[in-house]
Image (cartoon, rainbow over all chains, first blue to last red):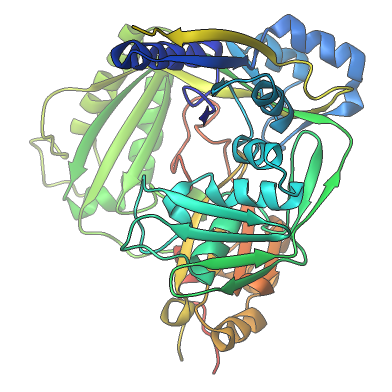
Amino acid sequence: MIVGSCGGAGTDRGVEAYAAIVDRIGRARGRAYETALIFAEKTRDWLREQLRAAGPDEVRPTTPLLDEPIEDAIGASDRLVAAMGSQPILAALDGGAQVVLAGRACDDALFAAAGIRHGAQPAVAYLAGKLLENASLVAEPFVLRESILAELDGDELVLEPMLAEQRCTVVSVAAELMYERRTPLEQYGPGGVLDLDGVKIEQLDERRVRLRGAVYRNAAPTLKLEGAGAVGYRSMCVAGCRDPRMIAALDPILEDLRARVQASGAEVATNVFGRDAVMGSLEPARSRAHEVGIVIETLAPTQAEANSAALLAKRLLFSAKFPSQKQTGGSIVSMIDEFVECGRSYRWTVNHVIGVVDASAPFRTETRRLGATR
Amino acid sequence: MRTLDDIAEIIRSKNAGIGYFTVDILFRDRKAYEAARSVMTRERVAQAYGVDLETITDLVHFDAGLAIKVTFPRSVVAGGPGLGETDLFGSGQYAPLLDVEVPP
């Protein structure tokens, strides 16, 4: 059994948490499991050292939106991980592990390692990984948390859902190849690239799909790095508005509100549901809603300050002034006279790809015998 | 005239990494896909969203999957630089493409 990225973020805490689960299950069953724990968390100093060795041209953010200097990004990071490929997992399996608990890992590598260990062609193994990484989402109708069986045979891959009411179709498989990426046609990993330019997807029978034509090429070793840093504490308040004049005057009202909350020392954002809360500046629709929901978020160095700012925002909305106002008893409606504490808030600090000499070296593996025989 | 929403099997959006929204449009049959492929250019997509052509960073016609994929940058990084997130997973950004007309 291979599990990754333990805990979601794939930090050391996540790996240890899963180890505790495996240990508890083993003890309950009177079984012992030879377990490999592969750690992916790195320190700020480790990343600084990688940069010194690699040079500035070898570090690329995955989006221009991460535009602060990399040194500042590292300094702002509370936690950092590197995403492992299949090599460290393969090594753990070759070492005799019955259970592998991986920290941050490329999703497809978890499955690819198993396939390659049993002699599958890398292209087919990585394609299987790509299609299995969201399990039953590769089949239709839409069902979460069900199992998929992949058969890897030479240069062919066949997928079959285990839940009787699901089936894999060309649409469902193509959709999964497209999922959460900019292109279905190629996927880079730490040591190579899966090229699907020539892939063929066919309905094998009513419930199974067969794929052929995937190609895997080695590439210069790289690592994807991820880091997050705290930015303060967040609070939220929610109000409704059913006054047509206030709805028409919302922009200047919210502009004034934001200025006054900022002056009190907090950051603030306003979201108008029924207008453009979902798409923001991309919203093309211009129709006027009869009712809107206003969600205000505040961010401040402490929870108490964020809460005060949310309370201030609510009061400002309640007492807002606008032209030809006839409602003089409070222009917004509330369900409760409260705010919502959202706790500590984080941002992406690092989301970069770095050229390395050895894409497996950063991942430390520890073997443990978890559980206990009776 | 029929629209993408009339003939597509799937129209959805999601984040692609932390910096992009990506929209997937998939078809059950080749004729519908080919008709849609002919109108779904970067220009048409930019027009639907009311953005400059350069904003549409990727447009992929995936013939083997009878699928079209459109990608454009987020205005803020996923989760926001602090505040500023409107759609954490990017799942609500496809609606402007529903009404794109597709000739027979």
